[in-house]
Length: 278
Image 1: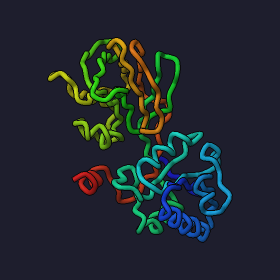
Image 2: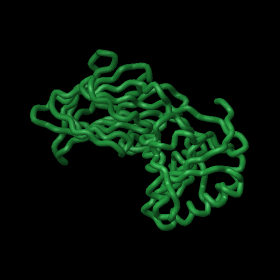
Image 3: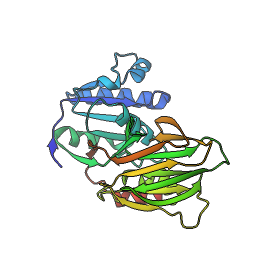
């Protein structure tokens, strides 16, 4: 993990909460007092009454601070135009991806402004029929039936070899970072983010042998819809949705560019599990 310093910070905050809007105003003031240049996502800036910047144009920031929950961080990774380190201030319900609590952010940000390290997290590259590429997934990709109570039939291949065929409501392909999210709720294992692997987790499978599988991150994964007349949705990190149908093949492999998280002193994966999931 390399050490970096800060001159300019992008702020991306939820703009549908008046409480978060007010807290973001205080955050901007704090950073200005620390002689840090800031730029705010356009939607939140409009609520505050200042000039904002579209997330896709935050190219000259040394790091980005999100104010919200895990969804805000995932949205940020989807919209940032390049690899910029991100740290989250938690104003969500669980905030497993956020490393700073709102009542303690000044102390932590003062340390980060002086110097910070970057934690690289593996992401998933997603392709539909070897053509259309979806945004890389930080947490997971979900293939889900478009019709509730009507299951899909899926064929799963790893490195060209068939692993399983089964009926299910869907399947989750998760990164270790996403192993504590939807994947965990569906019965998948929790995996340390340092482990180079992906998870295949069936959702309500109609087959006793259909169980979660941990796969090396260097493998290529293919999932084919094989039930006639059925349609499904491919959902990336809850942010991007694509419709697919019978015969479509969705492929997954390790994305070239990882997600960059700012490493916060005193935060570790196992303490977070105990604090937020138990």
